Length: 178
Image (cartoon, rainbow, N blue to C red; front, side):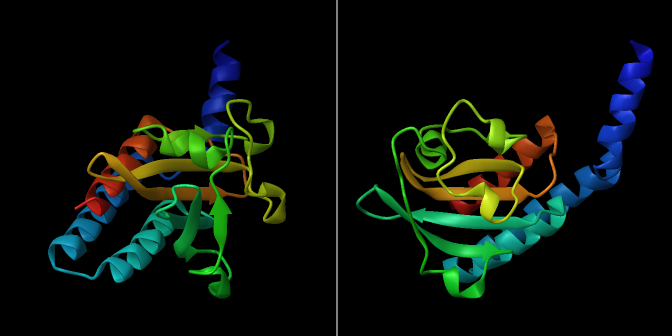
């Protein structure tokens, strides 16, 4: 059992930031986003900077903020890292029953999928094969009792998410609600 655990920890840690450095980076990113929000950055610039900072902190392949449209049946890609520039503001996604967007919007906590291809809690409607996405972490962005949208981060390699990753995403989401 010790050999298996040691091998797992070695493999897991090799794909992660050193814990202390990683935690400090997460705190620094939340602080930077908070400063921008309190400093009066317009919401567009704040969202653009948020996806860049979050993606770089995670060393993610993609990160985005999807905004829920008034119909509550569609979302638009508002800010993105790792997406084609022309898709920002133009790409719309339907919030389908049983899909990942509906699943995330119904929750007030993070939703992690370490392997989106074998996900059973919901159906992946945004095609992960198109960009070879393996793992994703999402969180709802709220405005009062209503949902504003979703912050998502995605990886081409399978990734195990720690509790600190969820806490980080929730913190970023909370800053965006201000």
